[in-house]
Amino acid sequence: MLKLKLCLVLLLSLAAPQPAIACTCSYAGDFIEFSGSAIVVEGQIRSYGPRLSHGETLHASMWVNVEEVVKGKYRHSSIEFVGDPGHLCLTYIDAVTYPLGSKHLFAVFVEDQKQQLVGCGEVSVQVVNGIVHGISFTNGVLEAYSVDRTKFVEQILD
Image 1 (cartoon, helix red, strand yellow):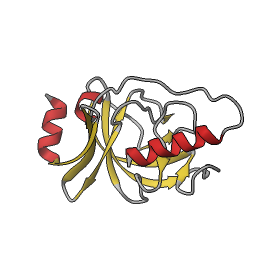
Image 2 (spheres, helix red, strand yellow):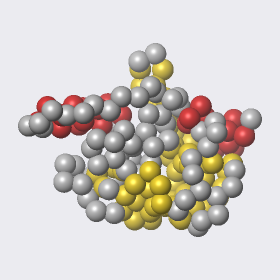
Image 3 (cartoon, helix red, strand yellow):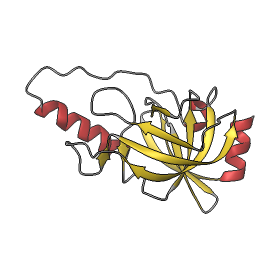
């Protein structure tokens, strides 16, 4: 999925008639690393904001119903995540990655109800039937992983 997103960004930058400003950031790690100082919530994808013009499955934002605060304190029952419109180093809100009704663990860095879905690391992982599914980037290689949710949460809380 990340390779597809990187290809999409490359193709869009090649098609741009004006000079493009590239997003540069260091990879901040898989979800366990990335969520180190973050609030972690589990939520279900409720709805999307407007569709972006440069992708059939890309949206400007999405609403997530917060079902559990796994780590830290978060007082809202929902979050509106704003994704990358194509140039901000945020995570794309892609209906393929975030299907309606799916559950995810999210790293949340502020207590606001509306916030950016930050990039440059694994900001979320999907939870299906008690199994966490994610993608790590190690030594230049993308690798999918699956871990029992209980064990995964224990690692987050350590």
